[in-house]
Length: 217
Image (cartoon, rainbow, N blue to C red; front, side):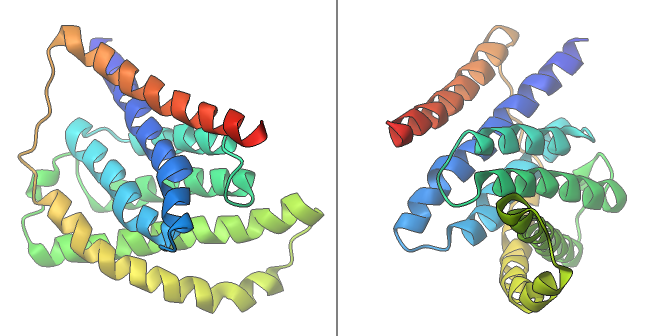
């Protein structure tokens, strides 16, 4: 029971941090002219997904994180179709979950070979970005005009894949670096674990909701 509570608290805090990065940091990057979406996927999203997998070694957690982060994205009206972006984030968590469930074990410290780490990084980042982008391209016309034409997606597919290739190459660098810290253990006393995770999560939610109120006022 205690283990499940710790897992749930960890899922909330990592999902909240992911949502915060998508709702607050991403738009800031976009405003400064940086490719926010690509940076988000290859750095923040991968970092939160991989670190949570390393720390908790629990299947299903990353899918839950995607649901939490996606729910937070629904509360943020900035950056185009926020509903479409929310579904894309949820899809990213599910895609990551599927890839790592079938390609890794619970003990990620067994991934010693650099080639394996790089290949896993490239494949994961490429597929997560591609899947999320395709979901966005499907959902945007459905939400805006109520229909979806597969021909439009096929026309845009080369652009998606070209961007995903860049993300994949950077994932081949960032994910092995994260995996190389396999001895990383973040531990808090029992009395501090829940207040810390709750405090971080509440801070993320407060800033995102406050940003929404600021936008509509």
